[in-house]
Length: 89
Image 1 (cartoon, rainbow, N blue to C red):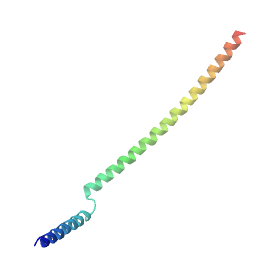
Image 2 (tube, helix red, strand yellow):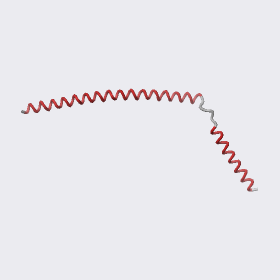
Image 3 (cartoon, rainbow, N blue to C red):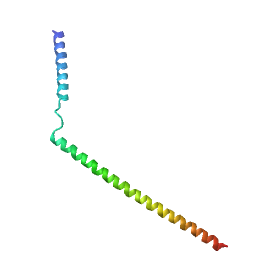
Image 4 (cartoon, rainbow, N blue to C red):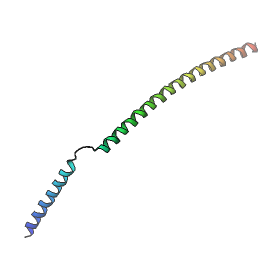
């Protein structure tokens, strides 16, 4: 009797496990709300990528301006050093 109960229990657990795997694997796909959410997220990603590109372009412009000002500052410092040197003579 004990062996029969053990076999029935084992078969029952196996069938229950197989049934749960079958149910979990059989989704019909995303529903309308999930598709809308996905599209919304895709739109948000596209917008954020545009903003990133705009900020990168702005950063490049600012880096260019900084480089120009640093070059001008270096030239002024060099000119000042030459004037000081000539005045010292």
